[in-house]
Structure formats: structure tokens, C-alpha cells
Length: 275
Image (cartoon, rainbow, N blue to C red; front, side):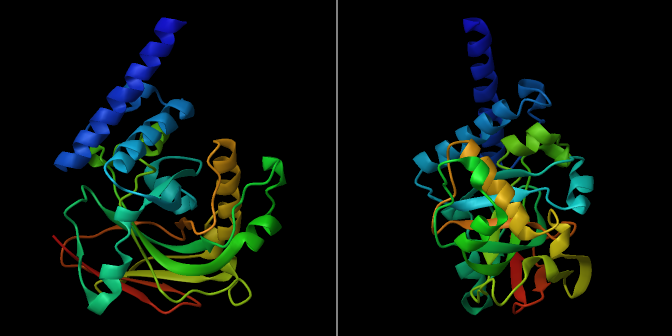
């Protein structure tokens, strides 16, 4: 048993090293499923934790979570059949630079980026009941301070986006950067499942969808995340930002491109990218 445990630990460490090296060099790596298997979610999330802890040791700070693979369109693109989650760190937030005078977002940390439009939530209180089974949709709704429009720049350190479910989980749910708008809406003003979305690259609509495409309701996606976070012993906290998941397919972009998210109920969210 000791050898099996140490072997599993070695596999997790090797996967962390592989993904971290790919991020640092901006050179995609081989999938990590050869190390941790295709269905061991405990190992996959252990790799994710290892990567996050390295970044925290370098001075980054957790500011929230992201939910991945919430829409059927994205699940088809990734070849997965269930959602996952990752961490948002303060050095992933490029909102201020994007909003300040229309400044361009640097792509220097990205490897193989794609972009998707989402509804984000800021939490007014912890979601940490004594019994995780008590995490209801009403409880989650009451915990939301405001909803915001967002763009998530998803990325993969794995060559050619050749990922299985454990690969994307290990790679912090294929996260990269994110942008959130600065004009929030309360849930009295906005019904998340009823929003419509168009994602434009250089003025051309390349993706569209609705709030209902996100696990039936972005608030249901938030409830799913709250249950998972509680189960993993790291509950969602007041002040956290949560990207609830794509409302349609993600699309590739390149340096020089202008990206716009039009999510009903919010002002358009516009960003420019540069190398």
C-alpha cells in the first residue's frame, strides 16, 4: 500500500511539473492522463491544487473560482460530458487594464487561448452550511451580491487541446485570464437563465447562446460549484468572484483581435488583445 501511495504521489508531482514547465515556457506539453489516468478525479484535482499552491507561494492570491464545461457546446468541443471547476487568482484578472482607456490585454502568458462569454457572480456571504446537502438554489441566490458580464480567456498547456477530463481538471480547468465588467446587476434586476449572449471577434458574431445553456441556469451552475467546493473542504467565501460557465461555444483569437461580449441586461464588454 505504501508503494502504491508513493507511486500515486510521484505521478501527481510529475504532472504538476509537466504543466508548470509548459506554462513557464509557453510550449505546450503532452497530456497528463498518462501519469494520472483518465478517470481518477482525486488525482486530477490534486494536480490542480499543486499548481495553485505553487502560484500562491509565488505571491498570487485566490479571488474566486471558475466553472468549466457547463454548456453542451463546450462539452462537445472538449470531448467531455460533465462540468469541472478551477481557481481564479488575482494575477489572472486583467479587467482593470482592459477597461482603463480601452487598453489592450497582453497575451504573453497565454499558450493556446480561446475566449468565451459568461455571467459572473460576486458573493455577499459564505456558502458554507453545516451540512453540504443543504446547499439549495435559494441559499445560493441569497448569497449573490451582483451578477456581472465576463469574458474568460481559457487556455490549455496541453498540445493541440488534446485533453480528456482529467487533463483539463489538472490544468486548473483550462484557465487563463478573465475580464469582468464594472456595472453589476442584482438578481432582482436580472434573471440569469433568461439572458442572451453574442460573442463577436472583430465585429463578427462567432458564438451565441443563452443563460439556459449553462447547466440550465447559471445559478444552478453556481449551486453545483458550491456543493463541490464544500465537499472538497474549501467552501465559497464572501467576496469571491465566480465565473459560472460559458453560454455558448468558445472561439480562438489572435493578437490584434477585438473581442466583444453582448450579454443582455449588461453594457457590452469590449477588449483588445496584443502580443
